[in-house]
Length: 85
Image (cartoon, rainbow, N blue to C red; front, side, top):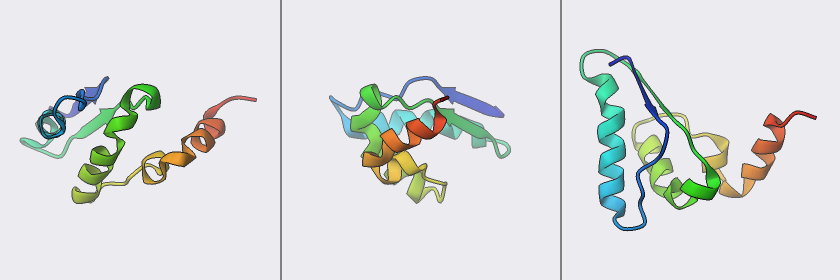
């Protein structure tokens, strides 16, 4: 697969390890034969509890960590940059 789009993150409330494994499995589908792209939608109100392990996975994979995951308190700032005035 060239692209995987994660429209929701796995629910980590019950089992963080399982949620991480599901996320890695989904994203890993893009790299089976050639380099692919995984896109994940992140909604703070729903996915905020997943931010720490998501940041950890991105760092371990040597991927860019978006500013709103690097410093979770800055999500409001990042959203203001995206909003139209």
